[in-house]
Length: 299
Length: 182
Image (tube, rainbow over all chains, first blue to last red; front, side, top):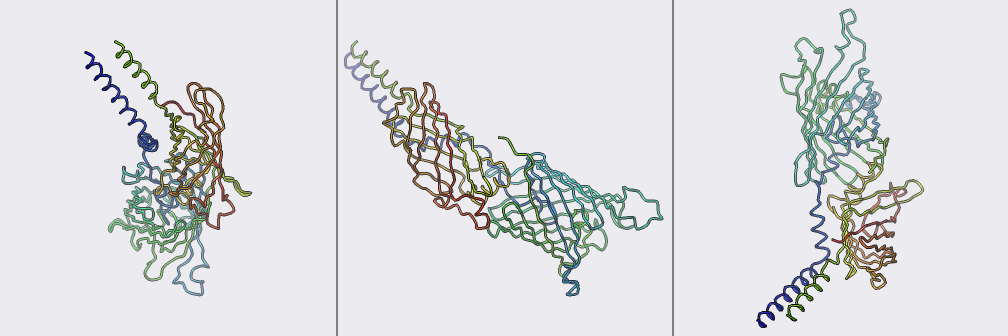
């Protein structure tokens, strides 16, 4: 009996001291690591691209909620026009745009281009967000409407206002592969209420591809190409190709680019580009983006 | 009989002493403030995890850099992408001790001045940091707060010349945590 009691006492003491050993020997930092792991949330990948536009077209990026992005874009004449036109700089085409973030995932924008006196509006919604160690891609959908306010070139014919309206729909599928490399695919549909020519389609299908390579923390090299599906394109048009740099300076982003396209709305650059990039039909262009915080977030 | 009594007593004592001496918070608050004549920058993180061992005076913090919230979304993006490089260095940590532990009586409610020192790791760069603060002991919780200043260059956070006038070279950090027994 006594022996048993002694043994059980020793047993309990050993047990207790072993408990002490574990609870005291454990490093507080290890406990902290375990705690932070427990509460880890999805780690959304941010800054896949510098701005909401890759070059001419949309990127998967959105303007943040409550933020207004004022964008001024210029495209000049063809470099191939030569010295007399100062390599295109004598002609400038401009688009002024205002984009606004309604929610974290949803943004809208309006713009006016001097090219064909065009008004445009769009909406973009982020359907999926890339998560590190999870969802591999970011997917956004855009829908746009464009109105060419240039007067009809056939005024004697019966004309409809809707004949000057165009629609675009895009799916943007992007992935940030590393800190420096992001790529994107853009299946696109452009709809013409009034086809351009008797043999031209009302629906123009194309697939865009593009990406960016960060050269350093503030400069990235971008490329964007839209391939029109043969048989679904307007005759006499070429595919849009653009190369450019994004340069970030605090509150501004400067986008410098060369492209064979003139217009800066989906309908004008994807389905109505006529320049041949490799024959010198290259325009210099730039965009300045400046953001203003309209509604300060509350946390 | 006597032995059993001793045994029960011993158990009671040891049970009492290993009622964890560790206190914890998961929603501590850390904010920082950079002040220059041109622009003030402020951000707050309400998801700070911290543990405090009141017996040994050990104090540890972990902060997800991405959880700092700014008034301007662009600032937040630049903070993560350009300055703190949060995808490369997702966490900032502190691993230290209360240096004047003997001056704090965790059994008596009251306000105590504390000195803390330890390794502060921000942007992947470890730096010994000291700070003064207060700890308010009450029966069911501990409230700790501190204010100190760090140098960005100590943590190899580079500020390009272009924005050097907008970002202060030293940043004031405010910590406020309410701990409950773990």
